[in-house]
Length: 122
Length: 282
Image 1 (cartoon, rainbow over the protein chains, first blue to last red):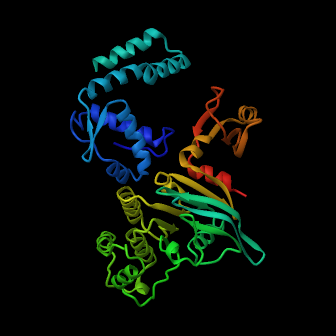
Image 2 (cartoon, each protein chain N blue to C red):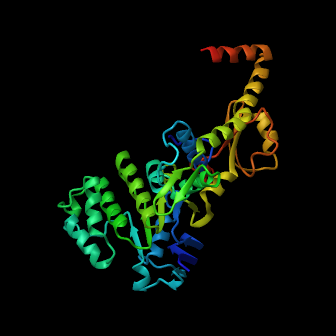
Image 3 (cartoon, each protein chain N blue to C red):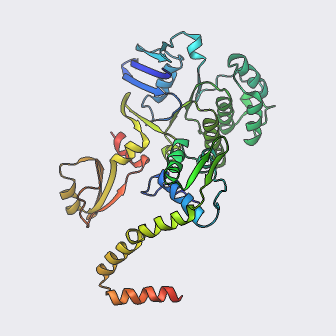
C-alpha cells in the first residue's frame, strides 16, 4: 500500500482504496484483522482523523466491521462486494478515458477492439 | 470548555507590531499547524500563550480560565521552544528527573525508551549536545510530558531525515494512544501537511487563515495553459498568484475548480506549500 501525497486524490480516499486493493489482492482475507487506525496513521505519517475517515467508508459499505475492543475485521462476502463495486466503476475509470484519447488520436472503434483482443491474448 | 483561547492579543516591540489583535481558539485533541514566514509572529504567539512573555493587551484563557500568572493553567501547557532553558551542565537523565518535579505526569521510562530510539546518550550534558541532538532532547521531553496541550516551536530544526521521520511517527503514535492538543509551528510545510488537522496561517502579525486542512486545500486549485486561455478563464476569479513561462501561464485560484473548466486548460489541485507561498507572498 502506498500513499501519494502529491496526488489530486484526498489522502482518506487513498486509504480506502489502498485497503480495498489489499483485500482484493488477498492480503487481508475475509474474517481477518486489518491494521488499526494507529498503525495506519503511524506508518503513513498521517493524522489519525484522516485514517479514521478512510476506514469509515469501508465500515459504511460493510466491507469491514468493528469488533469492540479488538479491532477491525474484513466482513464475509467483502471480496464479492468489492469486485461488484469495481466492475460498476470500470466504465468510468477506464473506458470513458480510453474513448476520449482514441478519438483525439483518430483511432477507430475497430482498431481499439483489436488492441483489446491483443491484450487478452498476451 | 477545554481549549486555548487567545483574545484580542496585541504585542509590539518598539515601533514594530509583532501581533495585531489576534483572536484564536485551539480546540481539544486536535493537531494544529501554525504556519508563517520568518518573523511572522509564530514564536511571539507561542511565548505569550505559555506566559513566557506578556501581551501588551488582550488575554489567553486555558480551559476558560485566564492563564496569566496562573500556575494551574500553565501546568497544562508545555512548550518545546527553540531556546534551551535547561542548565547547560545538567546531564540529560537528570533533566528528565527534574522535569518530573515540575510536570508530575512526565513519563521518565518512556523518555528513556525513545531517547535510545533516537540514539541520544542520556549521560551527556546539555551543553555538549549538537544542534540536532539539542532539538531531539527537547522533543523527547515534549513527547513524554503528558500535558493536555503540547506546543512545538520549529520542532525539527537540525534533525536529519531519519530523525524527522521518527519524530512524526512517535508524535502520531502518542497522539492516537492518548489524544492531546498539539500545536506545531513550522515553516517545513510539506512534511507536516498530512499530520495536521487544522491550519492557522499568520502573516505580519495577523491571522489570515484558520480552518481545517481539508477545507483549505479543497478551496485552492491551479490552472495552466496558454496565456490567452488562462487570462480569459481567470477574469473575475479570486486569483492569488500568476506565473508566466513564455506563452504559457499558470494561475493559482481560490474557489470551486470543477465548474466550467474548458478542455484546453489543465487543472490540478494546490498543495499546502504552494497555497502557503501564494497567500504569504508580500
